[in-house]
Length: 352
Image (cartoon, rainbow, N blue to C red; front, side, top):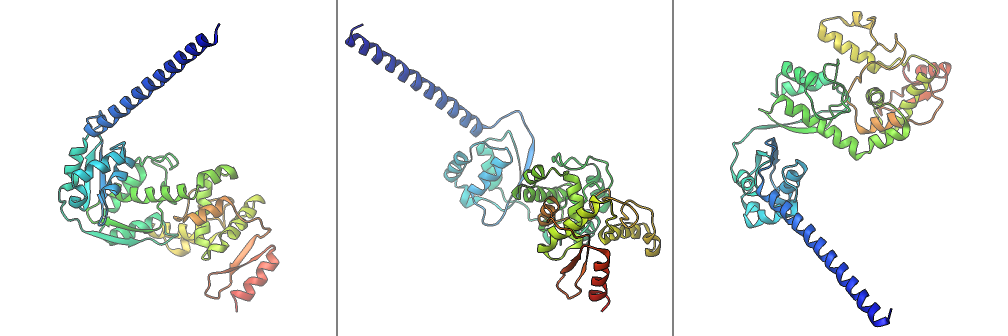
């Protein structure tokens, strides 16, 4: 085959490849544009409704991200650009809005241009280590919800997180209502209130890569949550959490009772709600009484922070089996390897 003929063949192949690439690119671009147009027009099969909250200072860009996260739209930059032409940034209203997944962009714009009725809010701070019952007490004291309804929701509602205990289990959400500061509407539903706690919990553990670290450690998630709840109650100094965790894990390894005041205090609170006296509760036969029973209690006994969860996943490696408060107002503890050493510490720090 001559060189000229070979060159002609090569040129034809190059042109063919170029044409195929061009056609493929045009097809992809066309499909992309069709998908964008379908997103703009809305009208999908799903009529699921989602609540989106707009706060003071939020822009159309913030709204676009919220809508994308909620699965209402797919193309936030397209939405943001169209919102600018619709003057949504200057007409965006504050409040909670309901949109459905089959809405068009224009329909969404109209929703968020509509002035919402003012809803009174209350801001509540829940400190770490509180139980679910104590959290409900604080909510109700601030005019949020009904206890019976809260308990129904906690016991049986599907919140969409597969790591939560199954519906119907006793003390189901103990450990999962994340301690933080929240702002609630006074007329907010019990389902929405509890979901806020759980969504915050999920954000915190996701940010801290809890499940990745859990997999590396080989520990069970729910047992970690139980241990974290005990650590939260027993520690007042963040730097000691991993050390306190080591004490309890060391006890578990040699089948030594945890003897944790945190679990007994939880039991006492339960018995107090039932009308039992403290004296009766101290001797009650319960798996939460870790002075009587070996191993972990059946559920968490408080709602811990991420710091306590991480300490429960990766405890410090020590040979400590005991600790007691330094009783100096700092919340710090002194640790011991033997009972004899511990008794000396108790005599030094707690009986002075």
